[in-house]
Length: 245
Image 1: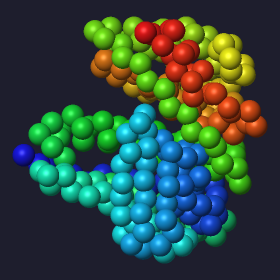
Image 2 (image 1 turned 60 degrees about the horizontal axis):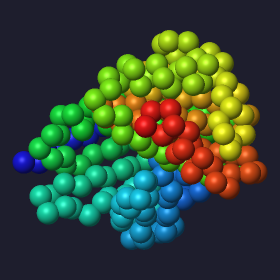
Image 3 (image 1 turned 45 degrees about the vertical axis):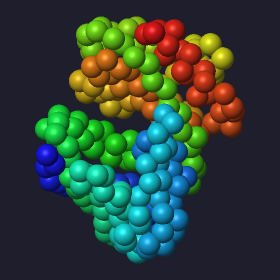
Image 4 (image 1 turned 120 degrees about the vertical axis):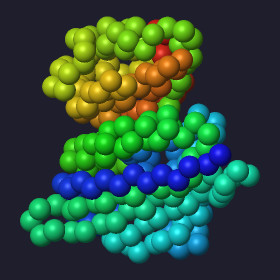
């Protein structure tokens, strides 16, 4: 049985409306702060797509008003489930840009757990968007995704293993310095800019790094702005598997 939901958030971003539009309504812009690899056909009625971990989700662009409004909607599944995203942009002179996000749709039988996960995740994603616009303006990132199953291991143990590997205290706290030397990758040296019970985010001079841990799985969502990113996804997959596999 499906269940309707709606999540609405608003944030003020340190960027112009044009910069915010590029971040939320173009494939390279979305790649630089959200999840997966993204494509956007720039017109109402066009297509949009996100690919994460080999899974591709198609959507229809339902609104395309440059600098003002962008919206997409996924096709309905057999049971009616779908997701819709709407972004509304409002410039404020001398005070950045206000972005309002509305995420709505129909969820399936386990809707409560899925809704709670979406509700908890959105503040983090908007925080990452703010970091992107504040520290990497005019640049686009290569997205990196890695995932490993963690079996029956308690999430707190996964969190502790990730923190140790990144030289972080427990619990990881905003402002802490993260240091790691992953094999086959540039050294990671940065600052924790987000920390909650499920994830922590790190900003370095050339990237935004996210480590997420949940029941039975650990994920890495990174956005790399450096020049040398060839092989980064495979290397992070090996790093995560070596640590938690």
